[in-house]
Image (cartoon, rainbow, N blue to C red; front, side, top):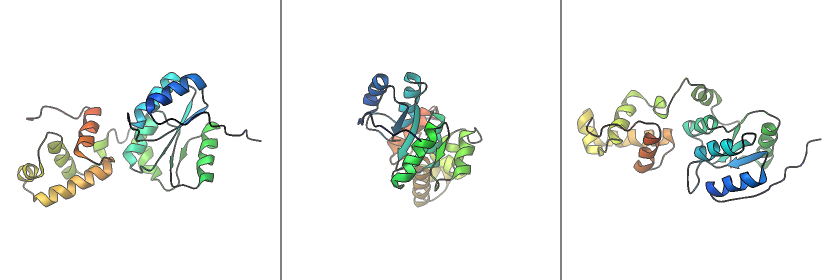
Length: 192
């Protein structure tokens, strides 16, 4: 018979989670991808440092393959979606506690496994060649009109590419796009 699941805490920030995990020594921590004070992947890495035996389940509304792969690379043993039935989330917890890995059934397993195995090394690997060109110019501070002029395409086409890039990378603003680029060392000389 499997033992009961006991919740030892519910905290709003990554810092609070680290402090609680240090005191409570949980078997498993459920982490959201987006937290108010830092990304969930950074929290997952810190939890693994503070409590190496603690397992991590990412539980989020985010279904972007890059964000999911980032959580696995950070040490998560599973990824569930908040809209899943409670029974499936409990099963995810039990699977991880037994030493297994869990990925919500509706997520693109092959794509995510390729990204976590190194076949897709970074976030921009999932972008098309044209999206990568637009991405490179956007992170260097170019507005849509300047990107359009540089690539000899219409500004509306740039906006379409920008939306596709943001969707694929799981970001919602240029600021988030810049943070992601900085995190992966993709920001270079702005005049390049």
